[in-house]
Structures are given as structure tokens and as C-alpha cells.
Image (cartoon, rainbow, N blue to C red):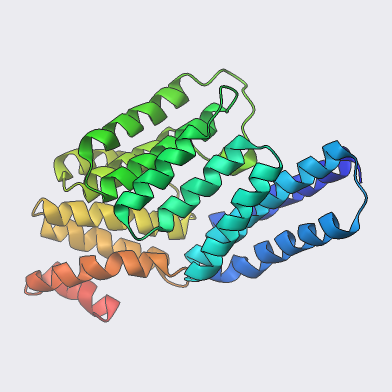
Amino acid sequence: MTNSYVDGLRRRTARLRRLDEILGGGDTYRVYLGEYQATKSLLRDATFTPSSRRKLVALLAEQAQQAGWAAFDGGRQADAESLYDESKTAAVEAEDSDLHGNALAFLAYQTADPQMAVEIAASSCEALSAGSPAGVRALLHERLAWACAVAGQASRTERALNAAQAALEERPAGEPQPDWAAWVDETELNIMTGRCWTELRRPLRAVPVLVRALDQYEDHHARDKALYLSWLADSYLAAGEVKEAAAVTDRALNLASGVASVRPRQRLTPVLRELHQYRNVGAVQNVLQAAGA
């Protein structure tokens, strides 16, 4: 098997990754898992040069992360963790420190213990090298910021967000980014910033940045936009802006309708629960009825 053949497989993986922009993990999991299993079969059965084998093992790590993400999004937590662990092993074998760091970041994202999640996310950033592309550095630092926010570590959250911002600002013109990190940009970072400040109960900081970022975020990213709107609704509630929270929640529910992902409803459930105390407000009544809550 040649390097050019592996390059073709990587391009196929990149094309299939675009499904995640419009479909949930309940729809994409078996597609991504099938690609991962096919690559495992190639590694077992095909003949390689040392270079082509290393590239294919790196692709296996990348595919395991995509399948793990779909599993997580579809509510298959155990499958996700197993795939992230396999990705980490493959990335180490391929000597790909960026994919190794991303596997750790994924593991941190679904770790239930907030302090342990911070430790794992910090390790993901430590895996970065001098040659890591700016998008990868920004991605891992923003995921560290999220872990710190969930753990209630405001100062460390801000430092990680600043590191992610610096990575994007220092990105050399034309620097190639791996496809799995190519989506990281200023809008994505602003959304993560707003999410972090929401978790830290700082609505005055969260609301403006989320509103600006979500105005630029297309509705066809229905799952993700529904998720991000849930944090905006949460911050509006924390600020006492009940009608705005109800309107945003209603929009999020509409976007999430029919998307094969468990996460939007999981995120919106506590928001709806908190809205119950304002059920005498007309806008709240309407959204609670629409949600069946």
C-alpha cells in the first residue's frame, strides 16, 4: 500500500466528516464506525512501506475520534470512551502528538469528574509540539478552558481562552490545518468563550459574546446551534431575563427537532426545569407546552 492510497482514504474521511455538520451521532455512528473498522482490516491484511503504515495508523486514530464523537453525540458513552482510548493508542504508535492530544481532549470532555477532566485536558495541551498547527493549538486550549469552567476555575479558564485566542491570532498565512481541526475559527472560539462564562455564572460576560457569535452561525448546523443557544438561554435566566430565555429556548427546541443527537435535549432539560418557576409568564407557558415539559 502506497502513501498516495492512504492520502485518498484520508480525503474520503474528510468528506464523510461533513455529515457531522448536518446529522447527529445517531445517524452517523455506524458510518464512521464502519470506516474505522475497514481501516483496522487494512492494517491487518495489507502490505505497507513503513511510511504508509504510519500514515494509515494515524488515519485510524483520526477515524476512531470521529466514531467516538458520533457515539458520544448519540448517547453511547461507553463506546465513545473505548474509541477515544483506541485513538490514543493509535496516535502514540503513529507518533502523531496532535492526534494524541486531541484524543485526550475528547476523553476530558466526557469525563464525569471535573477535576480529573481538567487534568486530562491539561495533558492534551502538553502533547502539543512546536510544529502543531495554530488550529490544533486553539482547539486543545479551548477544550482545556471548557474543562476548567466546568470545574469552577475562572482564572485558569481565562488563561486557556487567551492561549486559544493567541494561537488563532498568530496563525501564519496559508498554514495547512488538519481537516479534523479546520473548523476552529474566531466564531467557534467566541461560542466557547460564551459557554465558559455561562458555566461560571457570569451572564454579563457570556450573553454579548454568544449573541454576536450565534448571529453569524448558520441554522443548518442545527444540532450545534441548538446546543449553543441552550447556553445563551441559561445565561439569560441567570441575568433574570426570563422572556429572552424563553424565546431562545423555543428556537433551540425547533432547531433540535428531528436531529439524531441526545445532547440538545439533555442541555435544554435543566433550562426548561428552571423556566417552570416562571410558568405564569405567557412566553414561558408557550415554550413549556411546545416542549411537553
